[in-house]
Image (cartoon, rainbow, N blue to C red; front, side, top):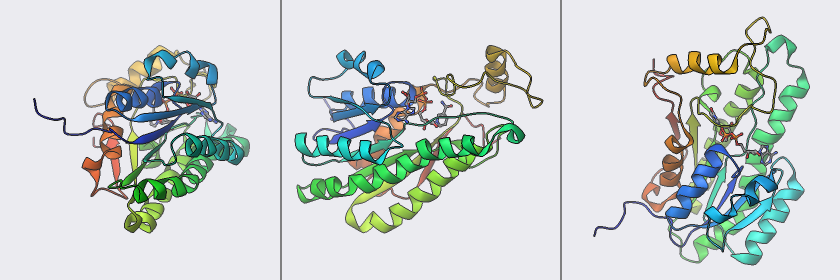
Length: 266
Ligand SMILES: NC(=O)c1ccc[n+]([C@@H]2O[C@H](COP(=O)([O-])OP(=O)(O)OC[C@H]3O[C@@H](n4cnc5c(N)ncnc54)[C@H](O)[C@@H]3O)[C@@H](O)[C@H]2O)c1
């Protein structure tokens, strides 16, 4: 039997927003590839309900990624339990869609704190633990930040969300450049429309005039715009994240990977 092209054996990985969607699927793939997992989410009940899907060594933590004191607590636990961190996936995020004229500054500030402060705090706090991983012989360590195609192209009602996801791209490249020589890699994944719970707890979809539209019809219309003819699934994104987390991607840093069924190529 040949050995698999990629594995995460011997690596400790923290995935934020792991109770749902892309974070959950990433955690499942990481588990299959042999990683030791630290999974966090603001929705700790949702995370605990999934505990049986992971190994007994998996740590599940309540974590609001916009709060620096929560990051301190998470990294204290990683340090106490494992002493090092090889992989960080900054995945937790929110998307609030609103016509620009109705989207007050609070809409921008809320998304900045969850989508951008999180990435800044998460990367900064990870560094001592990643240096410890390198000192213990790891070939490299990897940070994967989940941006979005809306950090690259515009989308109606996504002004504030787009601003946060563009910031994630720029932040990732700057830190990647600074840390490449320290064997700390930083890359960005930019998914297109993926069927998850994202945005479900916010306003139902509206048209450009602010009128309610049927959510299923809105999704079908969106899918029709994607060249492959369907919305993405979390399983379309997780293997890409796993590849970037693995030593197979040792030469890859400061890069961006679009996974959108051809949406932004058309
Ligand atoms: N679904 C898409 O179409 C899509 C497209 C591009 C990018 N993304 C990005 O992918 C990431 C994951 O989103 P998803 O689609 O899986 O959505 P999701 O809503 O299914 O999952 C997001 C998870 O993040 C958690 N979360 C929210 N706020 C948090 C906070 N303050 N602290 C910690 N956890 C928090 C939620 O509880 C949830 O478990 C997000 O960064 C999102 O912007 C999603």
